[in-house]
Length: 179
Length: 170
Image (cartoon, rainbow over all chains, first blue to last red; front, side, top):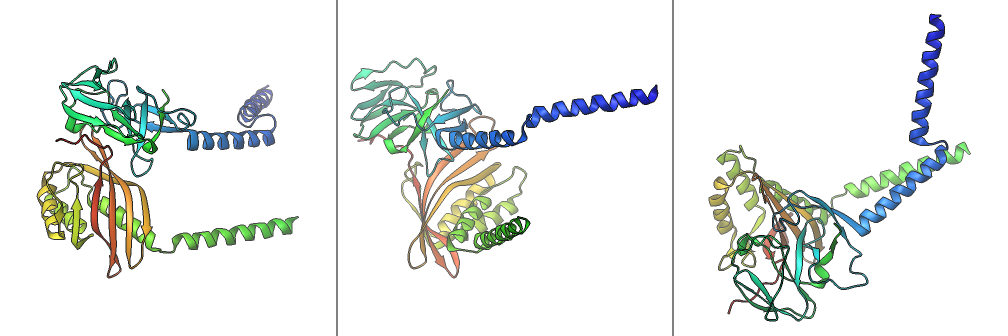
C-alpha cells in the first residue's frame, strides 16, 4: 500500500515536472530555441534602433512627466514627417545616454518671446493647457533659424535660470516620446 | 564530425584569445578614456567623506589638468570669463569641495578623436547626482582638448557646451 503511494507520488511529480518542462521549452525544443532567438533579435532591433527606453531624471517636465517615470523614445517618429508644435521630444547631448526631455513650442522661422510667463509666437499668445504653474518668465524675442525648434519643459513654476530651454537644431532631436 | 567540431572549438578559442589580447592592449584612446573616468571618480564625493579625503581628491583632480589649462564654462554658468591655469582651477575646487554634499559624477558618451603631436579632442556628457530627493540630477555636455605630457594625458582646455541657444539680451 505504502509502496503504491510512493510510486504514485513519484509519478505525479514526474508529470508535474514534465508539464513545467513543456511550459518552459515547449513540445519541440528546437522550435523553442528558434523562437527565443527570434524574440532576442526582435527585441534588439526594436529597443536598439526604434524604441529607446528612458527614465525621467528631472522635474522640468512636471506634471506631464514625473520624476523616475519610465517611457520610450520613438526614433522613427520623424522619418516621414517633421516635428510639430506640442510634441514632447528627446534631445541628445554628446550622445544618447543622457537626453533632454522637452516640449516643442516654436517652429523654424518663428519669433518667440516670454512675457510675464506667457509665450508669444509671432506676437500671438500660445495656448498651453499642459502648463499648470506659471512663473513670470520674461525673455527677449528670439528668431528661430530655418533648422531650429524652440524647446521648453512644462514645469514653468521653476525659475527660468534653473530650467534648460531654448533653440536646438533639428539634428539634435532624437525622437518623440511614445506615451 | 568529432574532429571538425574539435577544430572549430580550437578556432573559436584562438579567435577569443586574439580578441582578448587586442582588447586588453593599451592604446592612446583607452588611456584617455581612463583619464576621463578618473576625473569623474575624483569629482565624486560620498556624504560621510571628511575634508581631508575631499582635499586629496581635489588634489588628484587638479593634477589631471595641464599647468596652462583653461576652463570655459561661461556658456552655461553666470561667470564673466574663463578660468586660466591649474592653480586657479585648483583654488576654486579647494574652496568648493568642503561645502559639497554627496555627489556622484559619471561620464557618458565619451568620443575621442586623436590628433597629431600628442593631442586629442574629447566630447562627452557628464552627469551629477546629488543626495537631494527631487530634481537631484544634472547633466552637461563638454568638449575637451587634451595633451600628452610626460606620458600622461592632461586637460588643456575644457569648454561647457550649451545644450540650447538662448535669446541674446540687447
